[in-house]
Length: 374
Ligand code: SF4
Ligand code: FES
Image (cartoon, rainbow, N blue to C red; front, side, top):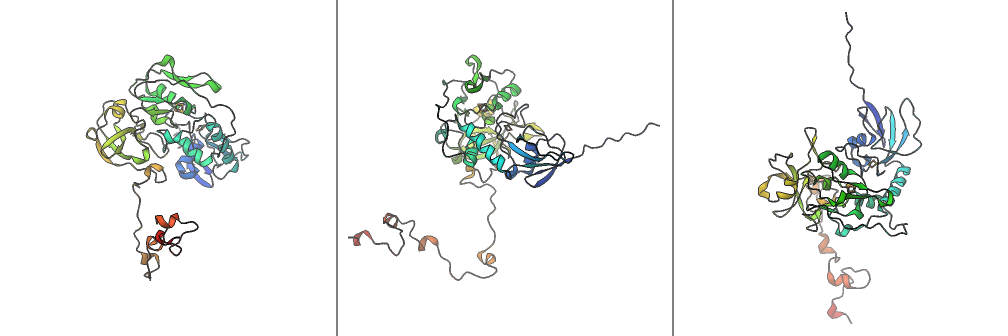
């Protein structure tokens, strides 16, 4: 009698990242294992994009230290590794925010990424949702050691919907993967090499494919921005709303960026990692009709406010899902009622124009009305 062959489910690998242990399926990268833990443990990723095949391995922002390779071979890896391109092993120990080497290397990578970056955040439409801006705040230095002229490029028109600012590009290749994998006719790519490398439409052909707008969503910086939204508003003044419509080309699930009743911009919905959300295992890329041509609220079924991470500048002024404390003061004070409650504004003169104008530290005691001053 033939022996019954039992197929064993693949064993999970235990990996410890910044002292937090998690079990993941074999074949998972360190970055994706860290994403499953979430929070600060997750390394930043400027070029990797889980929904784009072949992405990753270009920017080095996701470097981590492997303090122990595996249970079978616990030797540390001598160099820092790109977490988006390194698979976990059983018993691996990884350090990200707990490693000074990683923090130091990441600061170096950010310094390199900013060498040629114009740092024009005050006028850049990506400000407030730019991964390089976040990295700059976390790891950037006050000055630059670069003594040469920054790269400049001839202005190039790549069609009616997308604005290319080559000076802001960090050559992550994500947009070329979108063009390769979402559109059937790639007309742009990275030309030349090294210091001369640039994104360009070959012989200046416009990108007019139905899904080309997704390049805007994947660009981690402000190199590719939405021409229909350009200079219209700052993202933190807009109100993002989840909405959908029946679309025969795409999933039709979007975020509307509204100011009052005006829809200023339409984007695909993003997940916690800043990537386009998936529905039933498929990435929710949106078509150009949904993105650029349906900008009336009547075009959409509004589902409700988009959940934005409350630490994001975009959530300023509209904390969606913020839980207000329910306790009364007495409950906080262990059952005792306060004897005296003071309103800070009634006992302090810090908001008084006259007091602020007096020399020296101003208090309500040293305030002399102008009429009595000599
Ligand atoms: S334009 Fe944006 S998405 Fe394309 S390579 Fe440059 S930074 Fe990456
Ligand atoms: S995200 Fe890993 S190298 Fe860019």
